[in-house]
Image (cartoon, rainbow, N blue to C red; front, side):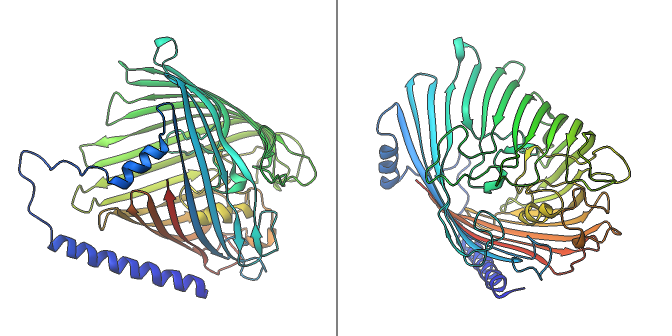
Length: 490
């Protein structure tokens, strides 16, 4: 492990020791339980909080606010899958700033807008972005990442519509959570129309969503300091029918249908890796809490359609459209101890099919608008060498997790996963020398995250991941990802 990794590891250990000490002191000084008639009322907001609220809401018809996030991220081997590459070690700072407003000219109607930017300072030569191969400051762009109108209770019915640029996450965000994978977590939006109808007596919500997402950053709305960047490798259109029934707490049912159409971007300077495709996804999610202590979610989806993917090498490179025949499964189970530390012991299993090199079909499961680090930052970057940024596929992932609150406002989580490939041949092998082609064990993965809310407006976390590669990879050097973050919200 490099010096940077060691330094952050020491910091995490020190903070954990401090939190354990603070927890012990708090327990020793803990007062007697409140009387049976109930807990004491919560403390009123401070004078400062009241002043901030008045500033942010100067009139009944308008609110505004903002946030600022500072991150330092360090990667080693993760991006290039070898320690010998000159861009293997990455070290950079990210400074995201956002400013938003919501205007309500009449009851039930609101206009919402948000402006975001995220300059980066690369301490070592960048492994991606237009700064690739260079160090220094990347001032990036200012992007309007929210601009929509929302109308609730249309015609006095439980019917609402949100039309325009908006953040969209369905369920746990397995297949719908991020429409702009190329800019990291700077933005998440989709240009969409979302129609929602609520059947209250049946505890059911029905949603119809249409999506038109352009790959260029300035296709629909102008940018500040325009640099002709891209949000992804293809233009994307889609339609979603999503139904959620919560009539049974032990079995919330969420069936859905998703259609996604891809048009590869062929313009000079556009990122490689795009495809032309019509992808149909039928899926369902069941989740709930059983007997107070057991929480679970099980989600599965089948995909069919056709895709033209020039990056699939096996059985041969071809510009033909291949029939899609893919499947994915994502499950989580937790036991809730309901103790003073809010301990939760979990187990997860996820399977995403990969392309079978012995057939003419395309068996790679496409995560659609789920190309972001759902469970791992290492996974986000390392899979780019065999698929594309954020497009995880061809794996089995399973293992335990532990989450608890060592003190008020603090959460510590620890995860372990064993990782296997469904096929020992990478689905879209972009770098043949990085994979052995004779073993399916991807390796052991461990992660820990310590999150703390210091004040109502200041929070932060320390996040670390390690993957010990198996014989699926040629390289046996440990992949690492480390992050320190502070977040201020106004």
